Length: 316
Length: 149
Image (cartoon, rainbow over all chains, first blue to last red; front, side):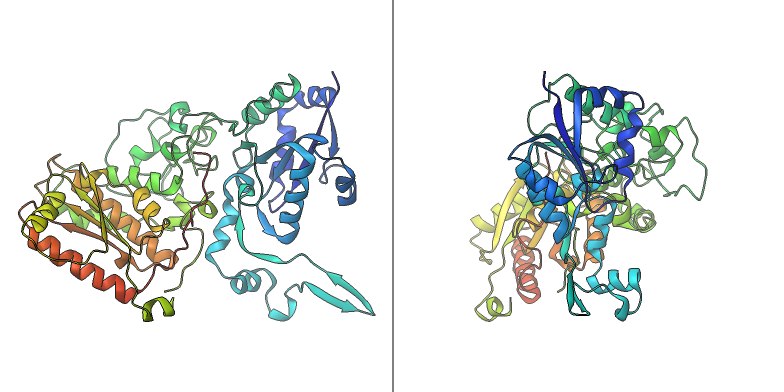
């Protein structure tokens, strides 16, 4: 069997996704037996010209991590799409926009002022120095997930994708048995299915944050009042965060049956808030609990805001 | 947007009405030959507790300028407490709308019983007027990127 040809690309992301490929430990040796990595800017020198030189569909699989933030990201997504038979959105940013999608709630000026300080220091897309000119790719209006600019074949969720998930993808690649288009390399069920904690569906009368109190390691975090995104989040990681006594932050995106992760979680929480006694006298106290939810988007849409109604700021 | 307003902006309003109270109230308004603005598209649901945040979000990102949710009065819910759950959901949703700059008044929860045809008429009339004043929704159609689901 001819060796498969694969590529890995890093768009708007932190770099954690590239590292996560090595988390499969010795399995990476099997990957190299079965496939040649022809393009991986993080690990091996390659120029965009080399990618342009590939034939149409020459690469069997491209793992694209990072969101589309700049013109360069978009151009590379479009280019790699034409060179890849199978294109995978690898990691939260490519899958749902990721944590950096929260930047859509700020204006360009606010983002640039935070990152670069004074306006004089802001990067310019075109500069001329000593008779030569330099062009930088422009910053796009909004950050979006990969599938908003090109057709995506597979999704590999997680921030970064956990070892079990990456290993599943590599096993399919090594066996030469890639699943049908649209496959999400994770569980069809939610995170709670994999969580070892005991759930009693207790009512929530106070919202707790992890820095305020150490959670009981045996009981369901939601039962204790911590906002754990488990019910609205796709499983597949083995509930590693709850196992480490931290609430799930929802990096794997929505479950197979829902589209909007944050609103699904808001619904879940709305059913749990209150003493369990349902009458008008409770409303004030319930609203006070709701008011304790600090940073609504950062909590409920931490990884999926770019994918939602709340992925931008409106003016009216 | 300003043009649309000048040319007589007619808002699109989605109303989720529970079958036991508010939808029956709307029916009563109809059989009583009450008149109210035709901007409302009623969607019958079994209980206001069926209306989740995602349905309202979907309506807003599919072109609705306002969303009305009609449920039974507190204590009257056919399913005991569905309306209480929806009240909490909408409270959360409104906080989320505030956070992104969508006027929270675009989503309204009202208790309308089966005998309150007049209240249905008055609510729809006032809500339509309010949305006309607020103008077209700032949410572009298709604001939610479709996921794999």
